[in-house]
Image 1 (cartoon, rainbow, N blue to C red):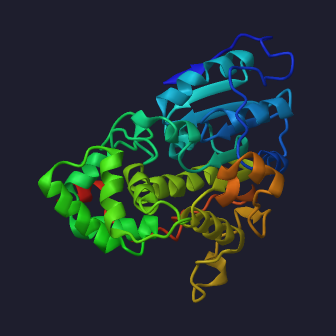
Image 2: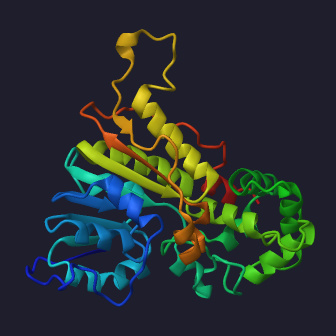
Length: 345
């Protein structure tokens, strides 16, 4: 699904900042500073509520944005912003790993990615992302594919434990997996409240700790949506579409995501990961220059305004004139595929 407008002269009087919502994205100011927006083409790979897209369009009168989101609800909600942008914004219903399908190689001035689940998704009980509300155990960012309920119902105890440990970093992953398998033998686990109650029985916690189901929910969500695989493919796609001097900005909320971005950019900037035994002539030229030696984090003022920014880390790099590398990003944890898990129960 694609939304776009070619009618000129429809920009809002104050840039394109109008519309029904004034969503402020996490780390918006440093993200815009590092993108160094000019009159070029930009890709917002994770449109959400349109915060980064709106900021890019407001930053330069000739900036154009192609924004992607796999969530049809987000695309539909973005129509007002498309209208206000006067032909400078196109929305595409697609995963951000497909960003190379919407722009030709070497034509993009900047790519911004805000990784993870959006506040809109978390706050909708029908989407099943949060244990704060009772709802169907869904967790899908898109409109198709297996849900978290399917995964919980069919995956083997071993695979569940592995995923909950690797993606949720849950120390009690074996106990959680064992409890899930035992509970599903008695009755299907189809709601968020039911799963949270099962996990809370076996994960010890003290007052003031995060909810005992937090890490399990995170792991299942990341697995259902292949979030690390999506990120790895999006980084490769950004490398292909960015023009020399183009900027890549990635905001992540999970240590595994941040590690993947850090490893990818460090490797592309200095050849890390290529065997030291290979002749120097086969070492690829750096395709990126890292702009953030350390991740950018939220300051105190932003944390007061938006507590969600607490775990956010921003990394950025600038594309060189070298050819895109062919090697895959390193740092993905060893995990079964979603298809294998669904056959394993």
